Length: 317
Ligand code: Q46
Ligand code: ZN
Image 1 (cartoon, helix red, strand yellow):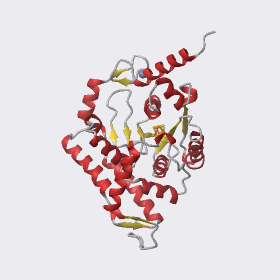
Image 2 (cartoon, helix red, strand yellow):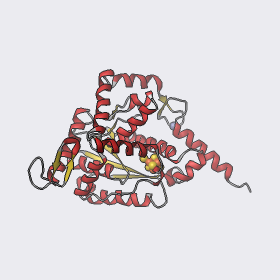
Image 3 (cartoon, helix red, strand yellow):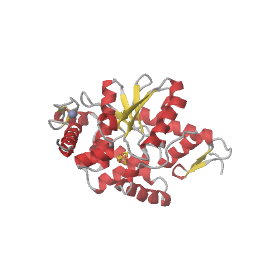
Image 4 (cartoon, protein in one colour):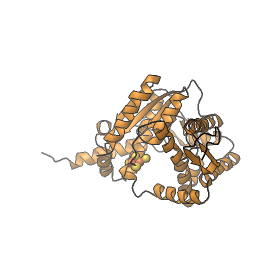
């Protein structure tokens, strides 16, 4: 198998593009896909400050790597969830990448430790508020990433969601006809109201397999295990189903997701209609000031419930 571009020995084949690449041509392909996503979706410009949400996994570290190598000003934020046997390992991967790759580019890493800031690790917190761990985690991560981006005046926040993540999320939203989520499923969410950071997903054109190969070929040391809390999640099931379809019919995932994006653009020509909807619905949380649809945002409600539960659990003397 030879490289489609330069005809030397190929290291990876991409059936969905009917192509195969050697290491340098594959790296170029990955960078070109990201460059296309950034330009086509108007994600950010060369002078914008970007805050990358990193987890220690292949996607977010590959994203940080690509942005830095393409000359963007990209710092990162890692949220340490305090999951025994997992968080320490993923944090070490992020810190190592920051020291060896990011710092020479002048980029910085910030760490938010849930145990210190929210007063308990993610599992304990979810027990206190009687919510599933992943729902608690989602609320904290969304809140803290947005807060950091807004307070530190980053122009945009970038996450490592890839084609598999977006296609499986789309499948879930379609299976349950979640209209509201379908409206918002996009590689770019504008800063529709004050207090909301603009959010982008520059890897939406690249598959999980392609990103794993990019990380491997570019010697990015990432945590291979999934977060243990993801076990049994519906998203993993949807990914499995889509992988089956992809094997039988290469290109299924991108036709499904990119086709959806095309139809969405035709039906809703501008992000402005979404911004108008948000402006009508959102106002500042009475406790913290972040935009919310209710009086108090879900993060502040959750933290109030956690404080109440932990104080009522404390023995009285
Ligand atoms: S990190 Fe958090 Fe995921 Fe782990 S606890 Fe669940 S939501 S599975 S992206
Ligand atoms: Zn709040």
